[in-house]
Image (cartoon, rainbow, N blue to C red; front, side):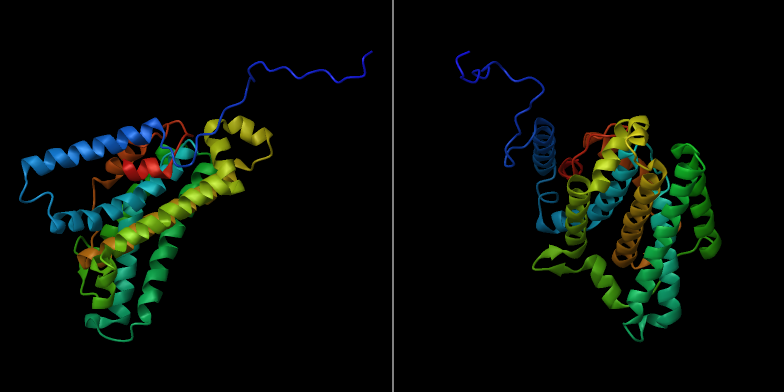
Length: 296
C-alpha cells in the first residue's frame, strides 16, 4: 500500500444540476415577456392615440391588479392538484358583506372612518370562511375539487343574489374609494397591493416548509402522505389562503367601482385559470413561479 488516498474521479457528476444565477430568467419567463412586449407594440401601432397613453396604462394597472390577485389564489389551488372555481363568487360575496357593513355603520358615506377596517375585516372573514368550507369538503370529506368548488360557487352566488336581490350596493365613503382608485408616488394602490401579495406568496412557496408541502402534495400526494405530510391540512390551509386572496380582490373591486354586485367579473374565473396555465402551472399540480404568473 502506498498510504496515499485515491485520487477522486474527475468524470462528470451525475444527479447534480448547476443552479442558474439569480439574475438570469428562465426560458418560459423570457418567452412570456417577449409576448407581452409584442402585444403591447402591436396594440400601440393599431391604436396609437389610445393604447400607449398614460391614462390607458394607468387604467389597466387598476383593473388588472384585481385579476392578478385572483390568479394568485387560483394558482395555489392548482398547485396542490386541485382547482377553485369559486374564487370570483367568493370575491363578490366578500364585497357584498363588506358593503352592507359600510352602509349600516356609515350611512350615506358619513361617520367615523374607524368603522371602515371593521367592514374590511368582515370581508376578509367571509373569504376565510368560504375558503375553509372548500378546504373541508376537498381535504376531509374527499369531494373532488372541481365538484366541491362548483357546488360552493353556486352556493356563494346564490347567497349573494339572495342578500342583494339582484341589485347593487353602493354609496361608500371617499376614503374607501381611494383604496381602489388612489395612487402612492404615482403608483396605483391596487398595483402595490398586488406586488406585496405576490412577494408574500413567492416567499411562502419558496422559503417555508408549507411551500415544500404544497409542492410535494401537488407532485405526488401518495409520496407526500408517506413522507408524513398531513395532506388534508395542507389542502385546508391552501384553500383558506385562496379565500383570503379572493376576498382581497372583492374589497379592491368594491373600492374601485364604488359598488358591490353578485355578478361582477363573471369571466374572471376562466381568465385567472388561463393566466395560471400560461404561467407554467401544470393542471395536475406542481410547477410554478409567481413571476411567471405576473408575466402571464
